[in-house]
Image 1 (cartoon, chains in turn blue, yellow):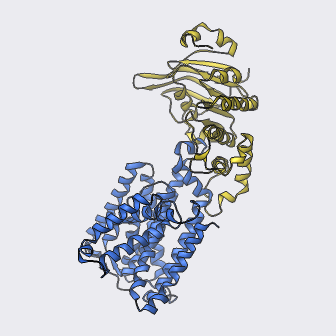
Image 2 (cartoon, helix red, strand yellow):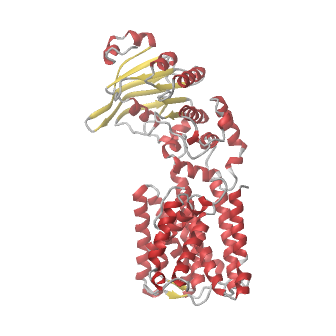
Image 3 (spheres, helix red, strand yellow):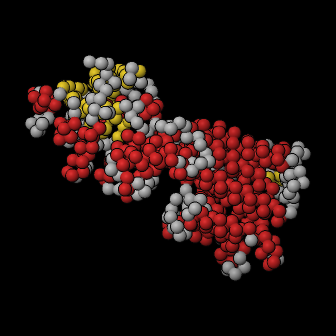
Length: 317
Length: 249
């Protein structure tokens, strides 16, 4: 195990210490904030699988956040609160849609791939807006959070927090195993040198499509978590700006690194929160927080070329 | 003589008005080293690309080991035993030398839908990969990033990757291009050591390499083969001398 893996584990341990700390400080808000960070980290890790390791710059990854969220929201709307079923549908439907979108878009590359993934996600976004039954543009409230046969109560912030943490750890482990397996090496080979990969007898398409599908499925789970987190469902989950934010988290954290997406999600969301609400900051900052966030992000990309993970000690993967 | 291992029949490729491959009949027998020479722009690389499967010919056929492979996709030809090195070195620059060769081994060890076990700890891949690195004398650099190898070492690495696919026929596109005198001498010796055990199509500008290694030579000019024969026959051919405009053959 190299030093980079230890950093990821240290980050997870740090996250595990947050609930008692928040309780001790009497600041339950941090629990909420970091749960949100971890949910977006799961989504960013799934995007990193295709963007970082696969070299497929998807500008439509928020689609699967939306599908996962709608699976939970719509089933709940019809009185089905069973979490096993809801989350199973969230993952399965996301995988199926990713397989369908991927089977078309993975044949393209470069700018065409970016545009085609964006176009498919916009289609889903406008579909969400157009269905009045599920609140259309406004979205709808999640009346009841997913229920897991009494095993875990998502209304308990601490229990929900630890569930997200465990799922984050499992996602990190899964993607770590994937990218170092034969499958992961074939995927990275196709990114590194496509002509050479064909010449040695590997056709990249099936591996890329499989990675695209797996990434969609994992992000669908993040969507199911997100809708339970906000207890509100809106088509905005699938907005193209959301896809852009996920890309930013991956790039800011360090593409094709294990801990990068987690660091990126944390940096992005914590900065956003800090600039918006930190009372120490003057009003001219908090009122135009997006501007200052933009400046920080531009500097980060310019001066940390391998992302935040690249600043950490240890060998690059 | 037996049926050739590789044969093209009236192969033709146009790029607009330019005829890059003009009705080429070409054959390679098992165990033979067949060099393709010709002036710049003669269509040598275009010809190789059609053999490897990167380009589809407009007309004509390619037969390999008794099978018509004219329409067969590039990766599938690799599995039939056709391997290719590139004029401009083509390796995985961000992987170690060992990873590069292990990937070539992996590509020929069944499908890669294996999601869980670490491939770098898989003796079935790294064992043979290390042997192929040793064969090209690069084993001491196994864990070096490919991008950090010297130009000559990168060419050696590419040859190791070609060997790792256990080819029946190797298509080598200028294997000594850009090498220093010593390096290219060593590469020629190495390729010479493979002669007889393997079949090679060698595209090369370096006449030393061609006349040392080739059993037969075909001369390509403006997409047409103007002569095929033993090195001695080619040296004596008046048309070839004219094509090279007095260059020393």
